[in-house]
Image (cartoon, rainbow, N blue to C red; front, side, top):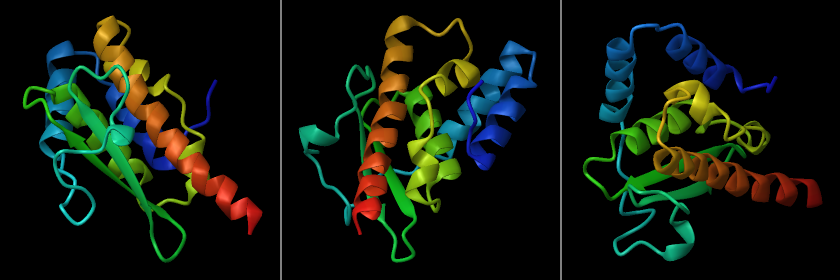
Length: 150
């Protein structure tokens, strides 16, 4: 069993406790509604390819900045206006990992996608969301390795 950062574990537990599929969809839509587009101070269109999430059907992008206290701040763009799942995932990752030390985001696993969205998620959508989680993890790992060299 994977160990998740505290805030992410709470979100996963809350979502998994919902047994009604309609209610679960509503909760994920609420997360998507909380999605905030990357500010222009971080990135402007057209977004650089190195920030594009591989395999994501919703054309998602991820950035990270280190705060003065060493914690990370994640930013996301989802270019597909119907990218509800990608927006929900971005909002969940932002809420649970922004403001945390790099080591926290570096320990997440793509298996959170199945825990949040369920086993019935389409292969294409699942790959894109797992790509988003993997990109967040890899960006965080850069800061973990940088900090360990200091």
